[in-house]
Image (cartoon, one colour):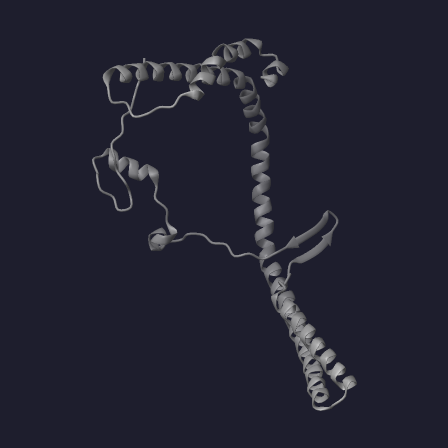
Length: 237
């Protein structure tokens, strides 16, 4: 309501306020299955009134939006052709950059993987050293030696935790370059395009409502996975 006041449309505001009480009443209605003619007549009359209010609101909404829509279309008409041309250029540039970006991404990924393998070997050697020390101290007697053994075992467990964290850490192989207009970062992702639709497995297809609707309208009454049923369609004038 405040929006209508702000944009200076008091007449439309009045139309909405005129039916607001009815709308509040409609919201409180609880409709149960109708089994007799009198209630059916009452419901039909109420349905007609609800439709009239809906129609009135839609007309007001359309009237209110018309100037803005017209202006928006004029703006789109000016900007869209320019933006479309730039989108074509953007696509050409990105496609031209793909091969190098993918190659650099794989090179960086391999370098990170190799570094982690070397780091894991170093950690493995360090862990084994701690385990050997723990075993050595366990074979000896004396409180001091026992303490050293416990500390060595704890250090080995910490190293194993570090190894697991390194294994689970995601490899960030995004390629970033700096230019006069800022940084350009390329991260690689898998995508697809359908080249032979008929060969795509059924599990990757979805039902098309339009085709099912046309089939049912044409008389088909059984379609696997579809419940076809009758419903009443009401018209009021």
